[in-house]
Length: 264
Length: 361
Ligand SMILES: Nc1ncnc2c1ncn2[C@@H]1O[C@H](COP(=O)(O)OP(=O)(O)O)[C@@H](O)[C@H]1O
Ligand SMILES: [Mg+2]
Image (cartoon, rainbow over all chains, first blue to last red):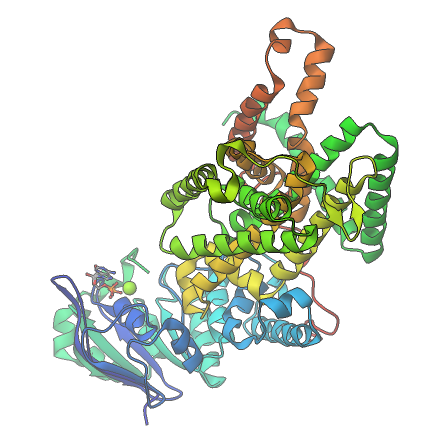
């Protein structure tokens, strides 16, 4: 059974149909990519999955459960978390605090526990802290626990976003253009890092512009254009699909140099 | 920018940063804290016994404004909302307590509790009502809140005595001891309140609750996606702010002995604002530094105008001059250190409890 099932979803903004009758699925342990030109509706799909946008049609199932139009909190708790096209960290908080916010729904105490500094609170806080440190260490940020998020180098900020997503306990990670703004070496590192995430048991749904990354990393690819799915399949199938070549891969040279500065 | 003119400034800045780091490092040691707290307590005790009542009064006012600054920090510092209606919470706390003790002859402490809870509840309602506002609109609404509240107090005569105000407020009775300036009671109690506010701030900020509040401040969309219930944590921040502002108000009534709607002015609410902008936003040490510098400003000015004997200075009321200085402080801080003297990123390591840390590598 597929882990994520997106079925005939539609999203309209006034007259604009940003996503139109789109269906796709992600199986456990897969790395699946969504590609397509700017404005194709990729980020909108992520926003629908994570509960930021209401669906105008269709449904989304995760782990067999219908999560359409659920609140973001319920969706995180179900096990989906994401990163953003433009890095969005808690800038004035430390690296470890960023990760701890990711653990928010898993830390079980409230205002009174905090005020009374109960034993239970201290125990749970300890556990959360240790988990945050372990996550940071596994991701290569062990040396930056004390730093403030805003002081990290660009590539490390991307990692921290992923660390925060992992800390939520998510099984499925949605990465929105993680290689954007990276040089080839950084992209290479990122790719290996994503493979290592998969090896740790995470399932990954990826939006990516960098074709060299996409073609090598993905188990399967969905191609979107004007809100519609125009092709899908294994990387080599997609690369040889005449529809795709016509719509978009024909321009691959131009496309890979394109700087993307769209929305989050 | 001109490098030459910046150099002396850089030197001062570096020296300041070095000192701050050295002190912060000292402060991380437990025995240093114990010594500092004991020394502060001893100093307060000595002041209450040896100094003039005039000086003691100034110290007490520092205490009041420190408490207000600490409470404002929950909203302005940790939640990141611009809040310029502090005088409103202060007044509600004061009136709620004094109405009970003076007009309904309640004993003091239960009235304090009710006063704090009423202010807290109003803070929470305000947060709930403004949950969809942000930025300039929210800031303007906090000011409107003060004026609405002020006019309610002024016109709700059956409850508040209206413009006449409430006279002959009995002195605060703290567990059987009547507070006065003579026995130093007001000084001790306001300092105790400040200490409680600091401890609560620390407990909250270093917990899941404080992190959620700061996350809402830094990026409210992402905090939502991390499962933080933004509205809930906004309300919690306002609740703490309201509670401690109410606590300050509950002591202020008996301290001054009478309350009128005009006792609380918009400017009074600006003082805590200036305190945390100057001292350091979202820090306790910043609130302390700011309160010590800003709260007695009118008194420094009075001393200055007396000693230098500039006619043109002496003819101006120091009360008026200090607002000019508040303005200058705000502008200068915005230009050079928007997070305040002691605000911004801490350079001491994140404190981890025992038994938590990196695995050996
Ligand atoms: N909140 C919104 N309001 C109005 N239009 C939007 C909104 N979000 C996205 N869009 C529009 O939907 C289309 C798809 O956007 P997006 O999903 O960001 O594309 P991609 O991520 O593929 O570049 C674009 O035309 C964009 O302008
Ligand atoms: Mg996008």
